[in-house]
Amino acid sequence: MVLGPTRGRVNLSLGPSPKRGEENPALARGQGVRSERHIPHDSPLRGCAPGLPCFSLSWKVGATFGFNGSLLKSLRHALISKKLGGGKMRRWWSYRPHEIEPGIFVEVGEWVERFKPLDLSTGFPDLPGPEEVKYAAIEAICQGVNQYTPSFGAIRLRQAIANHYRQFYGWVLDPYQEVTVTHGATEGIIASILAVVNPGDEVIIFEPFYDSFAPDVVMAGGRPVFVPLRPPLWDFDPDELKKAVSDRTRLIILNSPHNPTGKVFSKEELESIARLAIRHDLLVLYDVVYEHLVFEGEHIHLATLPGMAERTITAGSFGKTFGLTGWMIGWVVAPPPITEAIRRIHQFTSYCAAAPLQEAAAFALGMDERFFREIVETYRQRRDFLASALEEVGFKVLRPQGTYYLLADFSPLSDEDDRAFCLRLIQEAGVATIPISGFYRKGIKSPPMLRFCFAKKMETLEEAIARLRRWVRKEG
Image (cartoon, rainbow, N blue to C red; front, side):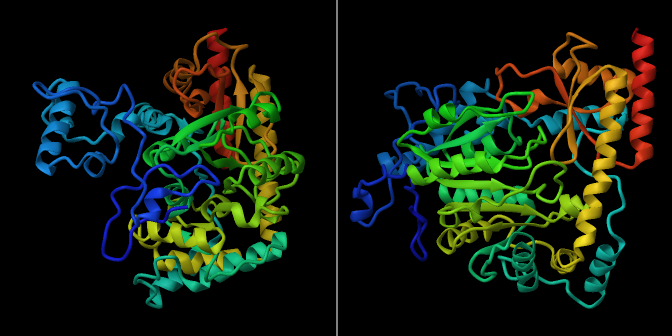
């Protein structure tokens, strides 16, 4: 694992990891690894400038080919401008925006802003959140906790995270060397990926997937490799997972409880993934932001399985459990060498999370276990109401084991694709959801399903059902 720069010097030549068991000759010379990964065929950086020979430019082209900086800049701008039709502003884009599609939440968010429906799309509760936690933030502000914390988090919060995991899972952590507070779990995930994935590395992702996973891998220069989860139970085929591993595989990304399906991976499934990771010397990034929202099954931390503590990166979230998602408090737990790498990336992205909100999060994680039992029952009540009501309306509902989302098959109501049907519900019924195709790669056929968020007040859910019933009667 290459961590990159020495003091005072930026390593411009980080590239693919050497194959396991092979010595890296570049490192033996005291250099980074020069990338052999080339720009994709459809990238605007691939092409020929007039009067110049054609090159397949590597990502680290300046270091690899030693081009003069101004010549390289002119060449890149010419190629981008040519591919984009000479646009005055987009010619300044790097290759990265061209490799990333706008996320489904941006698309649906624009529809919501325009048509003002009842919003069951994005995953934020309209419940008030625990009052004592909000007052803890106010008290911290009034007591002067308003300046930067250490980049990797206030020690009180890091200790609270360690205590919380010991209390709930018997998992003993060192808050100084294994816990990093991040600006939400999403920032923790991309910091982790940038810390361990080199250009050309392959990363296995279960599909459907939370929409930031694949773009994060692409931004790190990696190549996503997908393994399907199949309805109705969202199982994966162990043989397909084994075939997805190659000598370039670096990381498996796993999310449980799973967004958008609500699947809770069983102990047997986790053990099979762990065996594969150990056999092939892989890391696993384990996204557990819904760990306390489990209705059926048991949430198991992968790092607590034999042989996995030293190869698991765990991403957690305060906001999902406590219904305060806008506070953007997350964390990453990893063994010390990987934690050091993650902290090097994190310090130059968001630096630190908001100090008073860290104090309040530390207070929240120490709350009585009764709170965590009650929040599960609160969401279970809403899940059961929404599932039964949607079935009465005409949907076929897949009841989730965890999270605060459920998937509903709309094929009994329409033969449209999910984006078209989602937009029609927004415009005509006044209810917003998320089409499941947004959690799949572009061009992959997804089932005819919509994701509904039930982290809402009961009156919000009741009004949504009333609107859907009126719409179905009108359509029928």
